[in-house]
Image 1: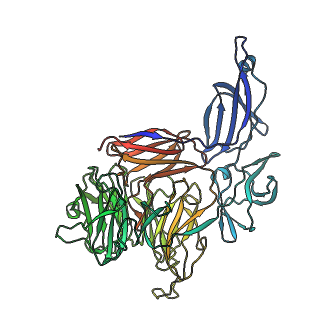
Image 2: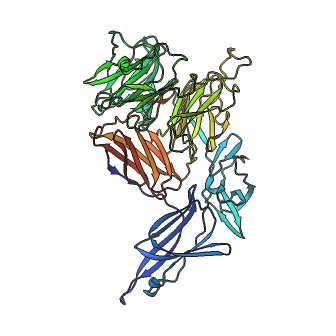
Image 3: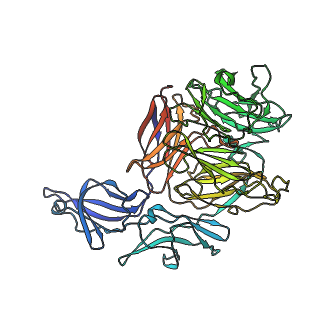
Length: 632
């Protein structure tokens, strides 16, 4: 089971109407009570938050045109009117018994609040993302640009789809507005998100670990790796990928790095002084592990509490089972996953408990390898259909937010292809997103994540090079930028090849979405010539819940384990994620799982274990450490 041993965080604030009540009895002077009422639309319905400095009874009146309803509610309290998006006037007053005890006859009169709009800058355009909470209101909506005093200076009717507005070139605030029976309902104003690049100035793999640079910022694995002799990752070996994990159980971060052709796989064990003991693991033939390696995976595949390593290559797959004391046993053959000379060749991979039975499975190439919990694997029959599907990167994520894993495989020329998780535990092929049209060349890399602040995750694709005039023709590098695909509605995407500025003579391949600096806001990391971080100065108001899963001794070895977060108020899904031991194309995100919500203030989480789903308590926004107290 898992145990929450520490948490911290506070509820995000919200606008509300406030009144002071004086309540008491027995002839004594009533003590004042601060009462607040906040009502807002969410994707689930209307959320009502009543707050009070001490428990009181309140008469809650709702007015919808000529319809008036009254009920008595306790305060403080929170409730969700599921499926109800009707804009209304609200009134909170003390019940007669409270008034008879000396309560004030003041009244709180808030309106239903629309959620703030989400806008992102796309060159000379502003993209306004559709919001199901706003569209669910069923009203004629407008998006308004307002001045510093909150007065509208521009108003544009909303179509309910992705809106594209002209970028005025100066800072501006925007809000939703709706007119209902003579009453104007508005949201708080929000500034557009504008993404800018920070050039890290070095080339490397897409893995975020504990190494830090001279200025104290976290680094990605690179050819000048901190704590290693200069260019150790590249001297006499063709550096390919890196994974970070505590491989020897001493509480320090280690790494494993494979090769692409020349050289041997190496493992570096972190030391207290920041340097590494570097070793070369051997296969069963006594030789080092080389070959043309691709996406590495780290996870505890046999359930013994030690982190193992999966190394797929064009020649065959390897599985290094951790024996403890820095000893390894190459066990791919006994595990049933050697797959010699696999075609089409292996590229992307992911370590994730895909069937939610508590054991970490492997998705690689065109295989879904189901783990029996002892480190033996059974291939799922035809997970991608009757034919194998090539990719230059795949990602496992709950893309459409329905509580099931989906898989996206990215073709370097024809773009992404989705396989949606179904109720039978398999996957439904929806075909290529761009319908078979060639959209890029050598575009390696795919990532899924919440970059803009949208409720639905976005899709990020490596930009590659220009589309050749003749398929297969060699072209010069022309600086195609990473491609952003916004998920405007479930399973519907709007893609932009020009969202990020193009760079001349630079190739964009690897991409990853993660929280680099731990502030709860994700950035895009792209290998575009050199490694670059794309972030926005402004962020939407979000409640951020972060979870650090560890074993009973506090070690970070829960790679691939799945955590699901649901809102306490109505049980709606906030997100489902797995601790990243490799997912995508040569990529590894931050170990800590982060969930975002613009309205949910408390979540209840469950963790998939071999003994079943373990449901934990209620968590407020902040960082929470969860420890697994049993191994099976």
